[in-house]
Amino acid sequence: MDKTIEIAKCTLADIFNIRKEEFDRAITRKANVIEARRFLIYFLVNELSFKFSDVPKVMKCITSHATAMHHFYKMIDLLRLEEKTR
Image 1 (tube, one colour):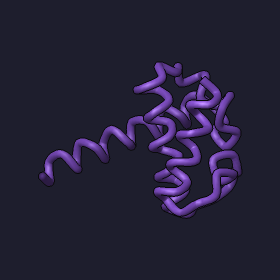
Image 2 (cartoon, one colour; image 1 turned 30 degrees about the vertical axis):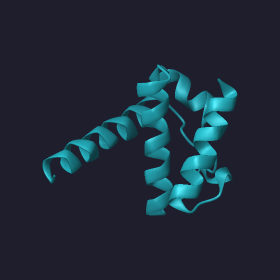
Image 3 (cartoon, helix red, strand yellow; image 1 turned 60 degrees about the horizontal axis):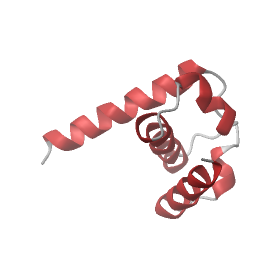
């Protein structure tokens, strides 16, 4: 499982043009970093069946399950909006 998460972090870092370490840095407001984190949280919960309370264990920047939930549902909203624009 750890290898899958590392591959996902590396892939998203390449896509969003950030460093892999940005997934664990606590404070940033850069849009591309926030979006990459949202994609990762969505992947962890939706594809790897993580509980929201388990996300902070693999992403040090996420301090609670509520933050993970916030980003997950923001990602769902983004996907729904994207679907409507097609």
